[in-house]
Image (tube, rainbow over all chains, first blue to last red; front, side):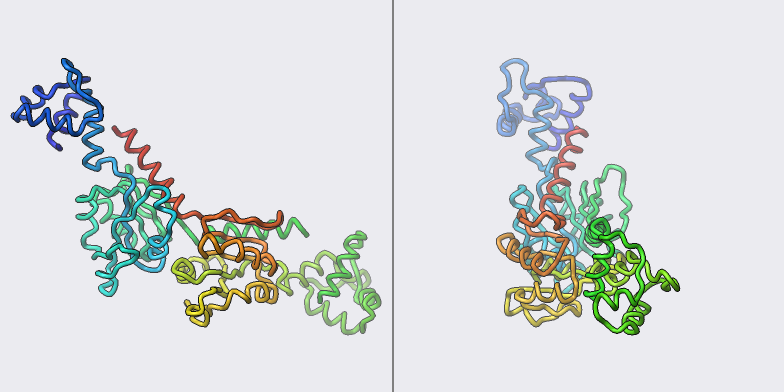
Length: 201
Length: 201
């Protein structure tokens, strides 16, 4: 499949809109019947008799199949009380989001299970994310460990980071970071309350 | 002190700007020397020889002393993993906020200690909040228990609620509610990621 993607991307860059199975088979030196079968299996629409398949649609379909556009699965790093609270939260499934693995550096936590999720060693972050096409990482480690974890996630192909550590993370430009500062949230509420009390006087 | 406040509020409503100790002593049928002592102890500024004390300042000073304007202390209800994460969070102290008590209905949790905070029975929410002039309540109980807890907090004089339960709370108009929906936060990040992936294609 990655070879198909590669060829389709070349065609796309040449502004070719449709492609037939024999054409791709020829370019990749593959059996035409095999390619026709693969395209039929993966394509969301039938190929047209003469023109073949839409290049853009085929790319989307294959990337979807390979999990290239996976934005529904996440991993969590730091298996402490906050991670436990997040993993126990029933709300994520409602939004179609699935946390598939947890990581920690603490040997006492590694191998344990939180809400049916196995806690793995942080060594495996990059490898697992890449292998499973995980693009969302949740960071719940202490501030001083957050940047290392963040780098491991980014190395594993993670594109979006939900950061609970009270620290600014350095990331490449294309990485989304959403910071969640619980203390600041409560401080905002406290400030609003002070304001409301003052106005009431 | 509450009697002073009562009289001072009446004077304030009559647009009286300053008041002397003897005047208040007379209205409350108290010993003049005692009132003078109390005012001297509580007032942030000295009384002026003839006019006496500023009514507004005295009200502020006494309310401050009694904790009427306490917006720096909070209690947390629901002593599960999220509460443990919040209580372990070092960030709150940085903002000058102190969580002084935790409550739960689970007999196994009541009496235990989380980060030096004792877990008390939920029966005691209203009483403790009123007695300690706590005006902020944090709700980390499951959705179906949240409204009961909320009512207990409001009955105890709590004015601001930080709600982690994924449920809409019914409160009187003067109560501030800040909802914290962790699942929705992650869903927003997932949505942004999908958008970014789409734009990149």
